[in-house]
View 1 (spheres, helix red, strand yellow):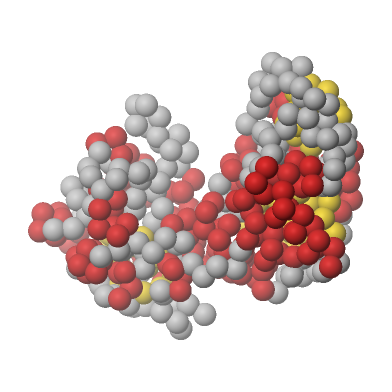
View 2 (view 1 turned 180 degrees about the vertical axis):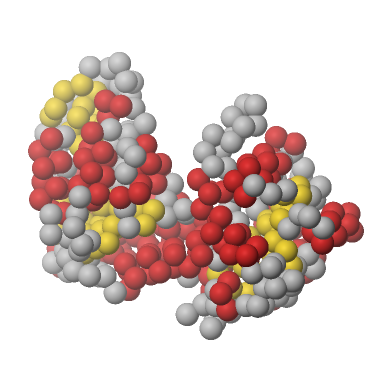
Length: 394
């Protein structure tokens, strides 16, 4: 078990918390979705309640190691101040003497500061010890609450733990708990639902899951590569020609392990990816000139039956192009099925799948929605995440 924020005496201490405020911004630099900021509030409030001075740090976008004004964290500082109803000091940089002066104001009325974008400095991604040490000078205790970045061995994630006592925030602790329990000691039957566009993104996940699950339901564009391997005509559907051998190996491995892999029996088909495009239901074959854009009604019923007695479900990847309303029925049906499962643990992988359940207003009905896209994928693959491995053991 890793140490958590509860394991430290925070009174009067400068607590340096790595958060993931890589939030979407519109052209006017207004935040369009503050979920990542909201998700860190329990950790921030806990530290403040315990009498700590809180110093937050994050990246935003890909500024490539130099300051880019449109990627400043000041909109995040402004939103955080509104949510906490307290002043938040926005620092001009993340290290250096000027930052130390700015943080000096934490002794006054303000108890929260946000360092400027870590990736304005090239040494963040290079994980140089000197930069990690300079970051550490800003605080006395380090807390990682950025699961979405914990698969990166960056200075603010991994390097800094060599300089300060370290532990997990509540958000990171929850991710480790739900993703970890689902993978290590799942209640059976254990069903995985995989979708999204590429087989290549999910190969490691599928291979790791075959040893643990009872069934794997595959939808989204990745299903067409598997269907092609099985000799099903897929029309003009998206497929990864260089991954057909791999898909065949996975199907063989699953058969040997007696893990049932369910593929779409029918499809919502269109002639082009356009909301106005006429659609028809075809299946299992797709005619030439048409492409699959969602799972069809027979598949929805088949997947519902497969999930009816599940006690643990992990879902990573939508069933179709859910951003377009006519192609969202499959993903919505899966989300509603999970929301209605009694006594089951339902874990939704981050990224598109999290956006998908949020779009249908069903995020609250899931046991856990991960905040990390790439990080949750790597966790499901069984990889060790540097940001978690680096934290102190209890």
